Image (cartoon, rainbow, N blue to C red; front, side):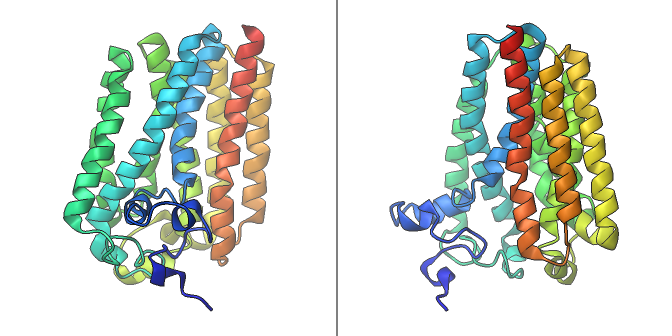
Length: 312
């Protein structure tokens, strides 16, 4: 059997991903640091932003500015997901060296120095800043308010069983941004949307954390996977049910139509499939179910987008 990590490939990256096969060799360690070989995180960061743009469009009709905001959030999601991973790996490099799934990452494996990672982090943050300042002033203010929870996130597993809740705050922040950019205000609809994203993220990241629960227990860090244990399935069902309810309330608060509710129903069916299929003792299945949330997020956005276009 070939050891993929001997060439610098990260253990949990998909085989033959574009970074390991086509990217210039000198770029690969930094692209791996930004998780470019595992783009699922960028999708999951982008969807709450896209939902918020779609919800604003459902409330006020589709416009050219919505398309601009989507493009900015797409670029920002890639840059800030990469920055978040780089920052997280800088903070966690000693812990990552002790966990089987993460010890092949660029910092603990020595592919990138801490100084190199810090410079790369600064470059990614600059891209994120350029995206942010292209938004209206109120949206810039809302975006700046996300800095504190993002900075705190890597430390949560050291002091609580609920790092997934802080991830929900951070990754769900985009649910506020699209509305703030469209209306230069906040209200019930985007706040409900953020609540939906928050509980959805706790759910899917708990599935993800079941891959590492034995190592996490040995290292001494917390996660909802360890906290929930064998109760994960019913708790996950409750979290996903809460996300569905809050999504429906957000659509109602924005004055969305029938197609938007169809998107919520499709999302609910997808989440129900995840709960039914879950086997917390099967890490491969847990990763598959976690990645499937890219499609779950797309269902909500598609419903909101079509609803807005039809109403326009």
